Amino acid sequence: MHSSAPGSGRLPRRVLGGLALAGVAACGGGSGTGPAVRVTIPPRTTMRVAADSLARAGLIRWKRLFRVYATLRKSDRGIKAGTYLLHRGASWNSMLDDLRGGKGLVHVVTIPEGFSLLQIEPLLVAKLGVPRDSMDAAARDTAVLHALDVPAPTLEGYLFPDTYIFGDGTTARAAVAVMVRRFEQVWKPEWTARLDTLHLSRNDVVTLASIVEKEARVPEERPVIAAVYLNRLRRGVLLQADPTVQFALGRHAARIYYKDLEVESPYNTYKHKGLPPGPIASPGRPSIEAALYPASVPYEFFVAFPDGHHEFNVDLAGHERAKLAARKAWDSVDAARRVDSARATAPNAAATPRPRP
Image (cartoon, rainbow, N blue to C red; front, side):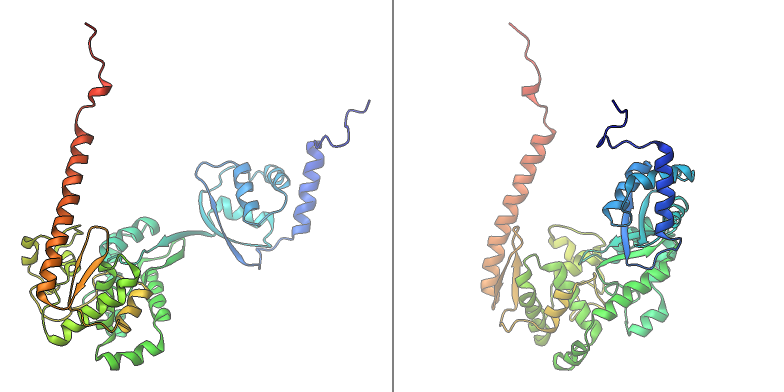
């Protein structure tokens, strides 16, 4: 009998080593000019796991040969975890150098629609490892504010919500520049032409869009909410937008109380007529479009219900009735939360064994 039966699938290590070296020779020695691919290497990973990740991303074809080559090259240890942007067609040499040296490391940052600077800044600080004060300074860059014609003291609203890939070592100023550039890319020339029709500035539209973003839970309601605020602006009455009060308070509240309406701030639209000085969050494209192209409706009032929908009205009497119904709905939700909280903190009697008689 032969010791190496056909189909056994096991080759001597020296043969695998030769194949690995041949494979590398076939792959070339360049850094790769193919498309960039994002691949994540988990913390404390092994070369086996790293090779699996590279194969799934289409960066290598022969996982086992790659592992053997890494071992022969003494590059199978010291891999740095993280998300990399690597190029297809790169040699195994360059890939191993990147993984061991942390070259090509990137930071993926997703900014959700409706995030404010108070939420965006800590996220960037944590992801990029930049100082908080440099992040604050970048968000207050007067040159950028002037270029965008923003009268507010910060770039609130102009760091466009999207998913960004930042290279390792990206500064706060560079990250902010990328996000502002993304805003400029999204803003369409026809939107600028639309401003004259609305008799609003771009900052006005972004500000209104940010309020719509914070108010809307049902996407179809965005243009209607924008129309309500524009109707109130035309009449010269207070906007009375709850999200502006939350912004003035510096915190999110699921429910605004009468005492909150007394906060003194130019952003409090219960006290100051017109739009606030600037945006209160970063609006997404749908909210910007809603502000530019509002629904043609006569509504001037709306009230939010716990399930996220709003009830719209044309007069104060109808609005008061809707407010009463909404208040009852919110009170029911609050009561249910209190019951759930009490149950969660109460001792579990069923889990305590009773003494036998």
